[in-house]
Amino acid sequence: MKKTCEFYILLSTFSRNHLKALPLAMSLLLPLTFSQIALSADGNHETNKVPAKCHVSLIDGNEVISFWSVQQKKLSKLKDSIVGKKAYSPQSNSRIKIYKTFECVLDDDDFKSRKARLLDSKTPR
Image (cartoon, rainbow, N blue to C red; front, side, top):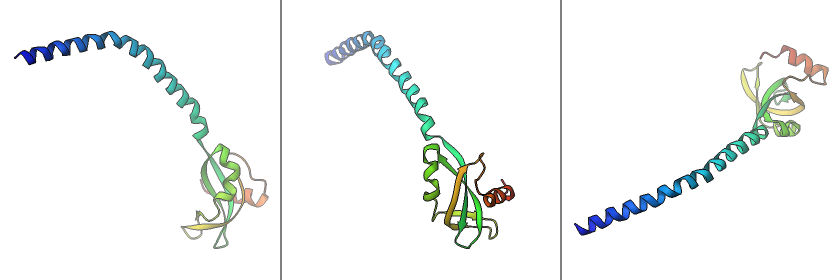
């Protein structure tokens, strides 16, 4: 019985000491939490993806407009990075490997090539 009483006394002392430290801990943790939330919100603009479209030639010889989602900073490298990947070919109703990429632009922008603009106008969205 004596050990049980000692345990409760020790537990109550422990709890009182921690209750005194609670306001201090909260005053330190709350600003850290909010600063981490703010940092993560600021960092999101780099990971947001933008829609892009590319004028490509497939290995079956068809030229199509393929649509991609890429980070803004990686748009300039998209032209080289999609060669060998698969794109939808409406002529065969399947995905076929990309043989060559002519041009990539943001989805709202116009292609420089007249042929690409014509293909883009005929491509269903």
